[in-house]
Structures are given as C-alpha cells and as structure tokens.
Image 1: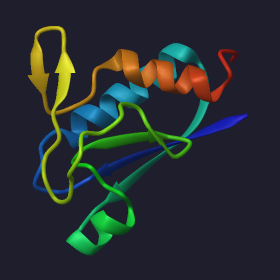
Image 2: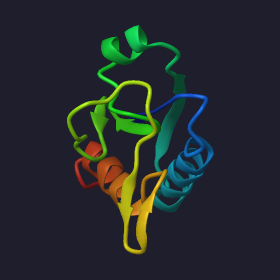
Image 3: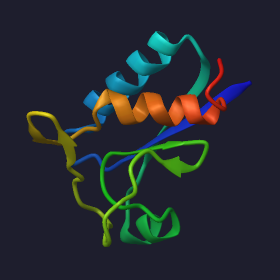
Image 4: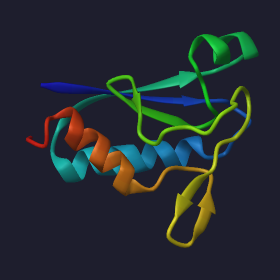
Length: 106
C-alpha cells in the first residue's frame, strides 16, 4: 500500500521547505511507501477549490493532518509546537496521520 501525501503551499510562506523535510523524515522513520506531492496554490480561486486553510497544509490521503481553523485562503498557517507556534507542522501529527492511513500497520 502506498500513501499519498500532499503539501499545499503558497510561494510567499516560508514554512513549505520545513514541512517537506518533516514529511520526508516521518516517512523515513516509519519505513512506509509514500508519494509526496507538492501543490502550489497560486490564486484565491485555487484556494477555494482546494479548501485550502493556509500554507503549508499537509494532507495524507486527502485528510488534513490537523483540522484547520475557519478561514483560509492565501495566508500562512501556524502550527502549535511544544515550544510555541511555528510555520510548519510538528512531526507527531504527520506520523499519526500516516500511521492512520495504514490502519496502524505498516
């Protein structure tokens, strides 16, 4: 089984490279087969069509790793880390989402 991981982002937000690194590290740690797909969101129309809550957004098999707050569009997204808010997701929610996609099994 292969999991599909999309990282939706806008070029103006700096969290994308860190989100991509976090996803790659989680995939490597779990030893799973994954297709990692960067998706650039360029317009408000794209954001609406993609139900984009902000950049970066990580989706595993179409599901956001963290339920998004209301709103969205072409804005930067913040995630809670143990040491405060950062512009990329922490590894644990990424790992959990991947494990869930595999039904808790790899």
